[in-house]
Image (cartoon, rainbow, N blue to C red; front, side, top):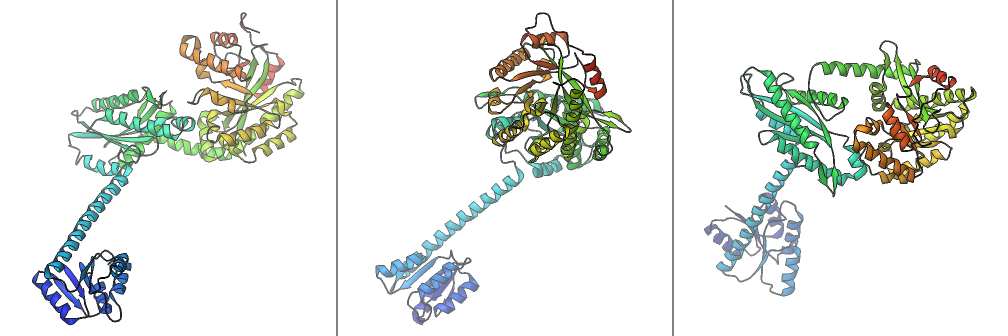
Length: 587
């Protein structure tokens, strides 16, 4: 029953209206003045208000103003009853928010018609409001449970859907598998082509994953580049081998699909992925436990080079414990003098003579022996220990080079790698100045090596820092060039002196026409920019012949020498070891 409040100071008029409304089936309440009417309105929150304009004390305009200022009553339909029929009076009421005007005297039909019209309009608005509210709730619920970019389920939704797939007992005919998939080196696409292209690629990746998994499975996006897949497989009797084979086939299908070319933004993009797999109930019965184990297997797949899948095994946890132990030991490695520098000779391809060395850090652990950089450098990067380690490497390499120069090898150069954290340090230039003053090494004999991924995050800042370092007289080398996704043309933006060609382009180059073509293009581009060329990883005579024929400036690699401790490197210098150059190489 609709409630209508009648505010009217004339008793006869008010009672007539109340009787009429009672007969029509409304719940009608009367108020003899504006103040009482406003009080009743706050208590009962009527569906509609009929109010006289001219009343002693608080008039109709005052009542309407108070009603519209109250959040609970602001939308109540409000109809004025008045003997004033001037346009100015109507306008004043409408500006205050009145819904209608009925002039006295009025007929029964006029009154009921106005009430019906306003209640109908209110009902329509309420229906619209509730519809919009329901839509908003549904949209909010969707956003809470889905990724906004790919529209895939998110982590929260994944947990809820896993509960629905989770077998009720071990006799269930379905076996559930959780796959954790992460894109390899995706940040290089974002860094070099921009986030917009990266977002388009992620949506295309999501589509391919869904197509591979199919409707029985669940695909969710957990973070920027990581996806989770839940898939139930039919139980193959008691044969776990067949089950794992089916899971492995799905994982390989995903890897094969994602490694195919993506044609986006008028260019071809290539991406690979790594996958970790956890099996229910062997590896866990809860989704978070299964995801953690799948992520552990994923990390293992990435550490082995990516573009592959790994099943979780408990042996991986042993590796995690070992990593924590290394992290703890690394914190004391510097103070205990456990770090060593090895030096890989750099040889001129004009004369075959040793012209310099690249300083490479090693860790002589008191219990584990020599630990390779592949194991401890990532830990140093994660923990921030790379900063003091990098400073020690730079200082030690400069000291050793000065010793060799004083021993008669006056033009020997030293090449030192800078980490991303080092390069980001505000006081890097001051550190380098202090080291040069302490060691007495002329800065023109120092090459600082940086990778391209360190420079593309903020080009302007990177250029400013590089110029500040070059102003000291050192040379800047770009390391691992071409292993990312960036355009070769970006080189000209930076003040480089040397370009180092990564060994992945040189390895078995005579058997790989594509690598040969790419490497020749890099060489020609570097020459156009007047950059010196140093080739890494030269291991065979055919590789040496290629770099000599293409007039590179220098090389380093196992064909001449592995990285050596300082005393062994000094022996090479004393013995004047030279690289035999191909007879037909261009001098």
